[in-house]
Amino acid sequence: MQQEGNYHVKVSELAIPDAFAIHPRQFHDDRGVFLEWYRHEALTEAVGHRLTLAQANYSVSRRGSVRGIHYADVPPGQAKYVTCARGAVLDVVVDLRVGSPTFGLWDTVRLDDQEHAAVYVAEGLGHAFVALTDDATVMYLCSAVYTPSGEHGLNPLDEDLGIEWPKESRLVVSDKDAAAPSLAAALASGALPKYDECQAFYASLAAADSARNE
Image 1 (spheres, rainbow, N blue to C red):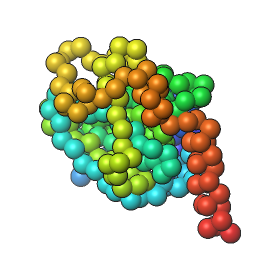
Image 2: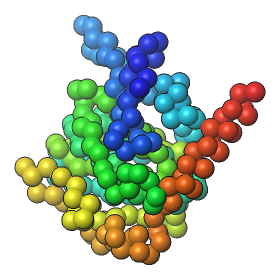
Image 3: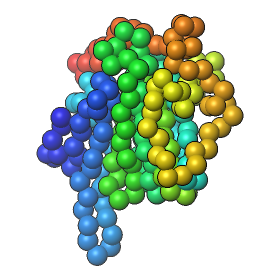
Image 4: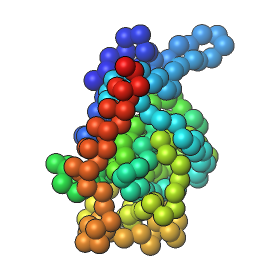
């Protein structure tokens, strides 16, 4: 865990290894509030390498809308740093890395415009969220650009995954995500990332960082 210290953020690993929740310290005064929603040193210490910024995404979703589960081939994969600027979402991280000790498991973090928490999702992990409010506005920084040929998805309602989506509103899933395969089907097809290959890729990113700093 990264304590607040000089960074004014706290970083803690989720139940899924290589995924982290980031909670910033907020500074309130008569003008409003200020916070560091992203601080590269704090994330680098937790993850082991810097997040390369290649693309920034922005989405607005009505209540009950589900986006995901999405993941990308590794390498290059696509790490994501996600926060909710308006409203609230339930963010979901799924371990899709074959051979991982937590393969097939998932964890959640509530992201909203009150706590201003963020989530880091490493390459090879599955990511999804559901909007808990109307006009839920999510922003995410990505380590690689969107490449259709290397992007994949799983059905977010896969019963074997058993993600506990909120029951208070009707879920809205895109046709593309609804038609995505189940975890079992993706595993059988060989489409899922391999845990050891992901770990080797993370190590290569850390080595490249170290070489740049020498």
